[in-house]
Image 1 (cartoon, one colour):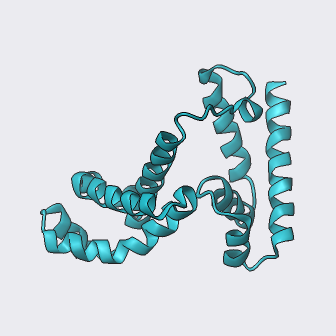
Image 2 (cartoon, rainbow, N blue to C red; image 1 turned 120 degrees about the horizontal axis):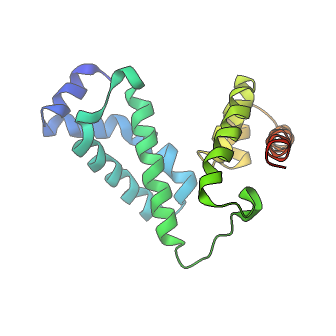
Length: 172
């Protein structure tokens, strides 16, 4: 994203917002579509993301990461929030992953997971984030990374086992 366009959006230039929408729409769709699947929800998430960008563009800090990273995080969070609202009536039991630990222990477990992931190869990190952060299907990951579906599934299995072992060793 060119700095000039970002500074024009910061100065509230609506034409710049339109240009940004054209440039960022494919990225936002790429992030939210695997999470939401319903095309109406995807459209709503794209619009909500652009509104959030417009309202909080002054908080963008290039020293903390690229504009694309920043907008990706916004889009992902909006999509996940939208999904949670849709599934509000369905009780989600995450004790399978977290155990029955209270909330304060979950942060520690997330940090342990991230520590394991950060120690992985770049390819394994990509697999982990594509599957568990961007929530892409095995088929999409396979196509994007040029791997067979079976290779993706096997790698994800090994990654989960490594994380599970770490959690069991650390938290008994």
